[in-house]
Image (cartoon, rainbow, N blue to C red):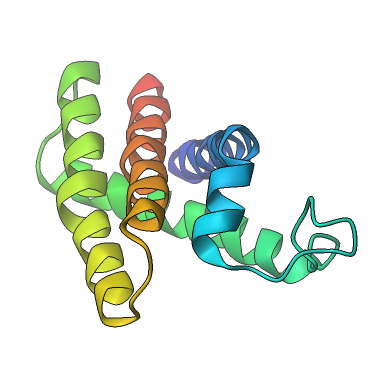
Amino acid sequence: MGFLAVLVAGIAGFMFGAIWYTVLAKPWMEASGVPLNAAGDAPANQKNPVPYITSIVGAILVAGMMRHVFALSAIDSFGEGLVSGFGIGLFLVTPWIATFYAFGARPFRLTLIDGGYATFGCTVIAAVLMLF
């Protein structure tokens, strides 16, 4: 059952990211400076499967580690899971993103967009894990 929970939670986090970046596509493309296609309305590598594979594998790995941490920490209620998932995203993942982007002279807006995904994506993963 643990493997299924991790798999479903990871997929949920990945799907949340698809929605997040669809809604924030224009500001993300502007802030990230990603090369765009000829029409200028989508990343040039949009059809490349590597970023999508990396993203879903990453989300599943995060879900697996979150499940492990939750078990070790005796986090077993939905509310505890939400707070913990939110905290992991906001206070563990987002500071790393902010550090990378600060040294890379990336726009703060990009930190907010990607840090927001990390924060709420971890919250979604935690919610799904707690439903199992």
